[in-house]
Length: 178
Image (tube, rainbow, N blue to C red):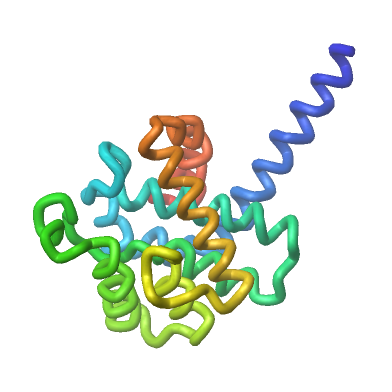
């Protein structure tokens, strides 16, 4: 029994390591960008920063991609990481402007001015990630993955359950050099 449990634990750790390696491979350049690093200074859900939340959501999207094997996995992962690239402290700076509807638009503007044009699929992912609270509906597998993962991770953030992601978050940061 103990050997079986140990084998399962080792397999889980190896799979987590594989996910982390792929995550860093796809996003290292973004994670090392100064404006993406600035996301660590903005609160998103209570004490959770926009950076932490975005990495958590993206890791969750990556796990969905591993399960369902979409064609454009790398594009999906990169858009997921930047879905909340609005770069302001919404609790104090934009709260009165209906942040829920405003921040996807601001994120797209920031992404395209900083990194260049997004593909239509990536643009829809960011614009629709607040569905059903926004007008734009997810139109791709990647957009649905992001929408679902964002709701799951936001709920975990508010309930204080996203702390369990801290070791993975730290390892992603360490391996990406941030």
